[in-house]
Length: 413
Image 1 (tube, one colour):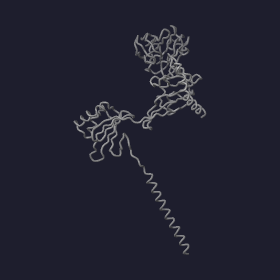
Image 2 (tube, helix red, strand yellow; image 1 turned 45 degrees about the vertical axis):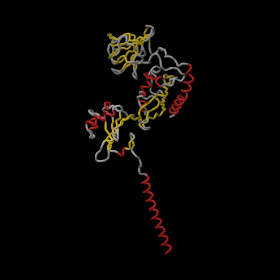
Image 3 (tube, rainbow, N blue to C red; image 1 turned 90 degrees about the horizontal axis):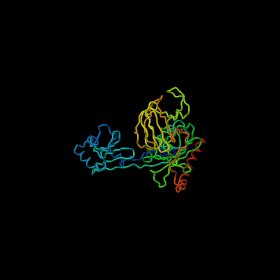
Image 4 (cartoon, rainbow, N blue to C red; image 1 turned 120 degrees about the vertical axis):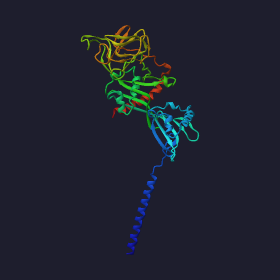
C-alpha cells in the first residue's frame, strides 16, 4: 500500500515538474521571439521622435512648413539663409515627400526636416545644436537578370507578363532600329535578354539600368546585340552582333515605332480615295494621329509643304544617292534647308491629302528613282576596327553563352 502511494506521489511530482518546465520553456520561447529591432531611416532612430510624413501640397513652401512647427518669420528667414548653399528651398516640388522629426515631449519641437526629391536622394536640415543642411544618397545596388521567352502580343506586354519593366521595350527598339523591322515580329518569335536593374537599399526596385545582351528571332535567324566600347566608355557604346558587325545602319528600318504596315510598295493598287488602279510607290504605316514621325537617316530637308495628294509632307535628302519622303502629316515640325539627324522627329502622323485614315506614307529614292525600301539592301555604318575585334569576341562569348543556355532551358518547359 505504501509502495503504491510512493509510486503515485512520484508520478504526480514528475507531472507537475513537466508542466512547470513546459510552461517555463513556452514563456522563454515567447520572450526569445519578441522582435528586437530599431526602426532606422535617413540615419536616425525613428523611435526617438514623433514623426510627420507628408507630401508637398499646392501653396506649400519650406517657410510655411516650418511656420506650422511654431517657428516665427525671422527664424525661418535666418534658417533659409543659413542652409541656402546646400539646400535651395525654392526647388521643392508639389507631390514630393517630406518628413519632420519632432521631440517626444509636450513641446513637439522640430528637430529634423527631410525632403525627398526622388527615391534615391534626400536633403536633411538638422535643427539640433547648430543648424546644418546636407544631401545624402541611398545605397544603390545593380542586379543582373537574364530572361528568355516568346512574343505574346506586343513586346512591352510580353515583358510586363515576365515581370520586367515594359519601358525596356523602348530601349530594345532603339538598339534594333536598324536591323529588325518590329512590324514583322510575330507571336511565338523567341527572344532572350540580359539586363541590370537598380535596387535602392538592396530592396526597393528602381527600374532597368542597362541592356547587357539580347537576341531576337527574326526571319528564322537569331539577331544578337551586345554593347561594346573599345575604350570602356559607356556613353560611346555601340551594339554589335556575335560576329562583331555593327547593328547600326545608315537608315532606320521604319519612320515610326510599334505600328502596322497597311499597304506596301506595289506597281498596282486600288486607290481607296481615287477609286482607280495605280502604282503605290511607298509603304503605309498606320498609327494614331499625332504619333511622332522620325527621319530614317541624317540629311537636309529638301521640301516641306502641302500638295493635294500628299497633304503635309517632308522630303529629306541624305546624300547624292538617297532621299526619303513622309506624307499625310497632321503637323510639320521642320523647315526647308534644316539639317536633321537620324531619328529626329520631323512631323506628326495625320490624314491630310488623299488619305482615308491617319498614317504616314514612307517613300524612298535611290539615284532619283522611287524604290521599295523594305526590299533594298541598305548601307551600314562604319564597322568595328579590326584591332578591337578579338577583345570584343572575348567579352561577348560568356554573355552569349548565358543567353543561349537560358533560352534552351525555357524552350524545354
